[in-house]
Image 1 (tube, rainbow, N blue to C red):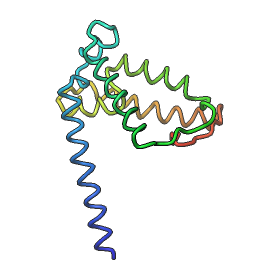
Image 2: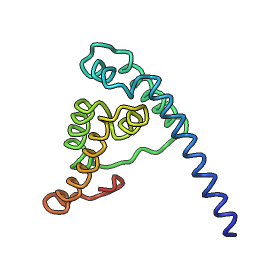
Image 3: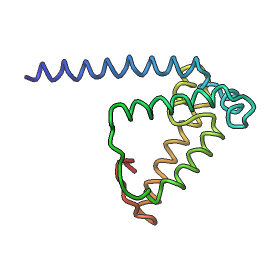
Length: 143
């Protein structure tokens, strides 16, 4: 029984590694790992990546519709709007959402280590501020 579990965990880990490497390769080749490309996207100087991103969102919406993934009913969590603003601002300033700096470091762009450190500090600050001041329900976001 334990051997089967280890094989299953190993297979899942291997599948995750392969999927992560494939995603990193794809994202890098699209240009999402390049700060200059991201800057041109956010300043609307070049719509290629913006349209790629919008296309990916459209595809996942269609996949969710085809799979009939249920929509979560209810109110918008109180932290969604300020969190989205902070996330977008950080992405625009640093040139990457939390996954992109990992790709940037793997590509040899070492200044992205500062972004990774900022993500870690930001998560810790969010947890501290929520526990001390906001007391927002953690839900699925895992504050």
